[in-house]
Length: 265
View 1 (cartoon, rainbow, N blue to C red):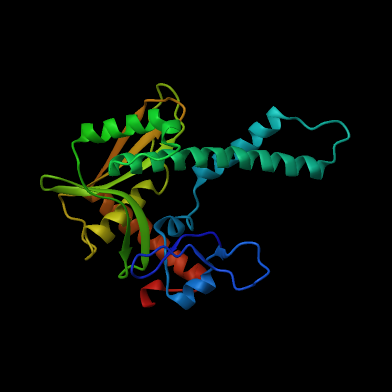
View 2 (view 1 turned 30 degrees about the vertical axis):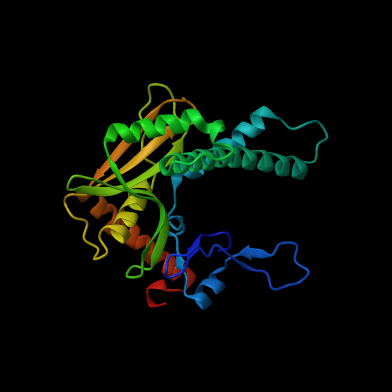
């Protein structure tokens, strides 16, 4: 479970721990499940959802491997083991490049919402501008941005992009970078609605009741069609269903798999 995201009961980041060995190259190491049990940490929403199979994501990873093979066929007399290692590394590079771009866009959006400018923001300016324009178009009043929300009752935590209000309506906005194709609709990926529902419960509805005046938004920013932004909304009924029928069962699987119940921490 190393490399997962963890939080304290007070909502402080605990993704890494100090390295005890004096000979270690790095002063910190990823938090493990053993650390989590000792420190009574809470797993992130995304860590919990990763316990459930995601066929679409698995297929995308497989496609990166296929693409790498097409781009660079095996060379005569090349050892098969060497070739497979090369292909897997290239596929991983593609996935990492996509993740890095998404992280830069996310950071740019966070900075713009908070009214600050940082090095590297210009690199993703066109994506950020499109995302902010869509946010303005929705007419949402920012309640809080880029914050940690904690649910001791259900045993999880997570970093949320934005909480908003609009009159009597309130909810969560989650930005996602996504590869799109011209004239094809944007379809939410598995778990995206459940992620928003989990954030909503921990932030707006700590008693677990998602009220009727609740709407969650995924704002998808295309990385292949600059300027394209699509919004998918989830009403209260949808979020209740996602929370009770997907997220809570995922929590149960996570607890069983890790032999750890953070609700009892």
